[in-house]
Length: 258
Image 1: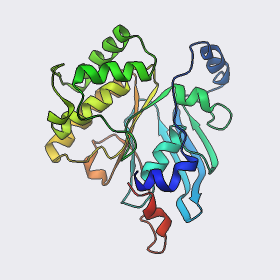
Image 2: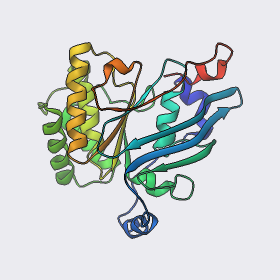
Image 3: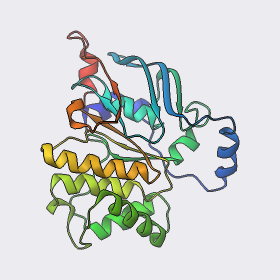
Image 4: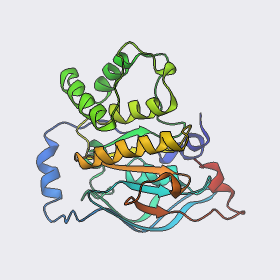
């Protein structure tokens, strides 16, 4: 088990899709929602029994732009990503994601967000083929296979990639592995897709290709939040929140590092 899973197991929420009858409740919950600012936090903090993970995070991500959390190893960027996705307990502060309150509307938030990759927690099964990965994800997210396939193809078009269905995940390049994970994450009717460590394993050119695809996905209507090590990996126009470098004495932050 990863360090993040080990240290934060008791506060990590694993989500699953909720029935469509929640749609009315979702609309009512967001009736007064101003979507100019799509994700916003105020004084958001998280700590374990070993100490702080991230502290006093104030961020505002506007609609229609790729969003990024930039932070060094140990800054808590993965934990912050999970918090915004409604998969983390134990935090304090104020959060709104696409109009949803993760305290009172956590089921709705988890239903309408999707995790592509999260370091050591959400990964692809290397032994599966692309076709098997599509089937597996559609079953997990309770999406009819035909509908899932249509959404997958639409995401692949935005990401500018085609996958042979017989290809095994372990045969893919790092770039295609990441793009496959993102495309799979769009198969559920999610409003926001989260991608941790988007830079991992990619050279400068590959990272630029990925980011261009993610921007196209945002333009097509899916809000995307990524975490990266450096802002130089991001295209101009990205909405960025930078996490401070962890204090040397903050051993607990290292325990949940990305």
